Image (cartoon, rainbow, N blue to C red; front, side, top):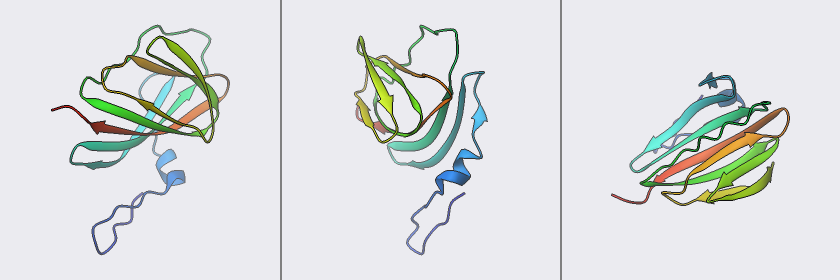
Length: 118
């Protein structure tokens, strides 16, 4: 999946990483790609579902930055719902409850979790 350079850089081929997505549950598949001091990057896929899950996730000490790679869906964060489509970026500050859902088909995100609070 990765190709380290002479300087220790890590390069991830998105198509190869997507092939390594592992099921978290019936809706979500995930793989980690890169980890460093105070951050990690991965890919997550959400399948469209007929049942809405009201649970949200909170990262108390991490900001989340997501790039929508594929599909359409929504982000629910801070009491607001934002439609998402491929090519969009979103930022969720530490401490903000949030969740994602696919509209139809698959919603694929590349995310970064960045530690912002000790």
